[in-house]
Length: 193
Image 1 (cartoon, one colour):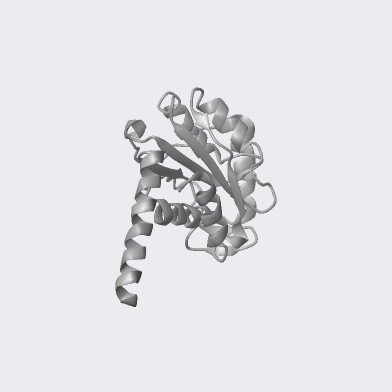
Image 2 (cartoon, rainbow, N blue to C red):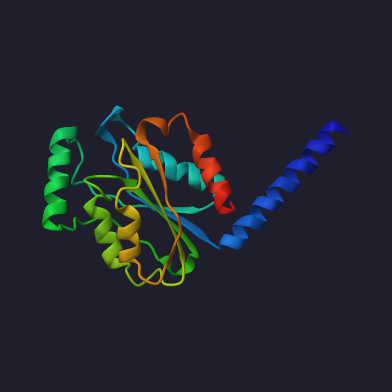
């Protein structure tokens, strides 16, 4: 009897999650993440933002598109932040691999680390390419950081995607992502997932 009750409760919970996801429509997580030498966590095989993106996918059933560039591969932290500073100052738009058709999605999570007060410049390459693709869609920014919070990411996403419904963003310390999945879960529940 107890096992049957557990199965019923599990099925009801899954049904409610599917219903909530239908309210948000088809969802995707678009993100850039930097593995390798990172501030506060050292040399990591999986970037902090990817871990958060994976939590979002696990908890919502969203698809994923990772913005990948090899421009920063193997760079130590200090040379990387110096390069990122120059890219931001010069408005550079580094290339990335592949692409995604956003027309099939209603909700788009956009995430990345905070480098010099906003997302890395490679994300702005993506923003420019898809500037007209998110009109009328819900866009949810998130960041990983070591003290910057959301920095200017909210404003930059709003500017990049005029006509999108940009909701309140979420930020989490990079050194917390491996142990604080509950913070991501709480945020997502607050959004209706």
